[in-house]
Amino acid sequence: MAAPARRTPARAAQKSVIRQLHWREPQPAPIVLVAGPEEVLAERAIAGLRDYLRAEDPSLEITDLRADDYAPGTLLAVSSPSLFGEPRLIRVSGVEKCSDAFLQEALGYIEHPQEGATVVLRHNGSSVRGKKLLDAIRAGTGGGVEIPCAAIKRDSDRVDFAAGEFRTAGKRIIPAALRALVQAFADDLTELAAACQQLIKDVPGEVTEAVVERYYGGRVETTAFAVADTAIAGRYGEALITLRHALASGADPVPIVAAMASKLRTMARVWGSREPGGDLAARLGMKDWQVDRARRDVAGWSDTQLGLAIQATARADAEVKGASRDPVFALERMVTVVATRAPFGMSVAEASARR
Image 1 (cartoon, rainbow, N blue to C red):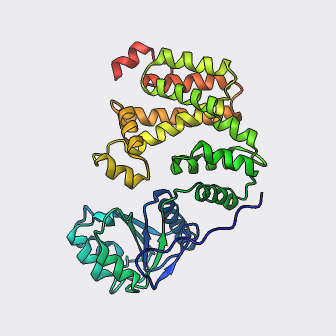
Image 2: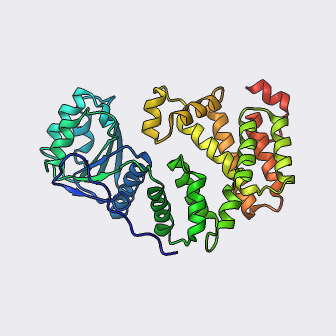
Image 3: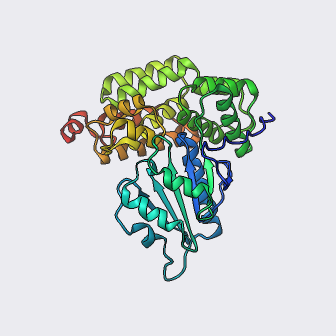
């Protein structure tokens, strides 16, 4: 289909004299301000900037800093030229809650940015903290650019976003399929983005309404997540029964694996974090309830067990897409590994003893 024309991104509330770039088309500058609450767009913009710089020079050095947990002197140290003069990308998160030390040093840095360094400042707009720094950048100090990441709230904006995902990938999707996909993920842009990428990756040719129904139709989606929920909760017998019932009812193996992967991916994102739920949700671009649910799901899991489950799901994903002649066995093995949190072939008693 002919994708809708891209809308011009909303300008920041603060009057700005610097260039405003679309999040799909980031470009390097000494200072890149990524501002606004929509975390999915911010993540894409920053990843796109990384890819841009790495394509120019594969020796790119990347450093991640937190503005709220900042050691004085770090920004200048990591941005200064190295012995061999490799380009540097410094990604700074949490500017909306930056420390006094970071604010003071950042204000000094933008007066004299280091040659060969690109400093990305991520501010989600949840507070006025750091406003002095943002105002200075928007006034032109440092020769920066801004990538606005305004919240996507309207259905039309979500349709534009999803259409852009397919257009960028060169994949055709018919209008009815696009609407059905957006409706299926109306409350979660992160999941909508993941669903778009899943269809782009998996589906040969045009994406039709039937394809969207196959992957994300209400009955199949509910069944798929029921399998994932029971397995992740460790209810091994119930998980196998739910899986077999889903298959007997005509559920496709691919969305079942996709549901498991989605749950595990979210668990991995929150695992080990001690941030307050609201702060973590804002940083990851998730809803508060999603963080709370993921934390409940991952409670009691070790990093080794989570890694094992993710590996088993990745293997099942390949097998149900053609790498194996027995997709049912692939699903049962995945469910077994996830539910027992142990390598396949270990008895339930042995697995329980390891937990």
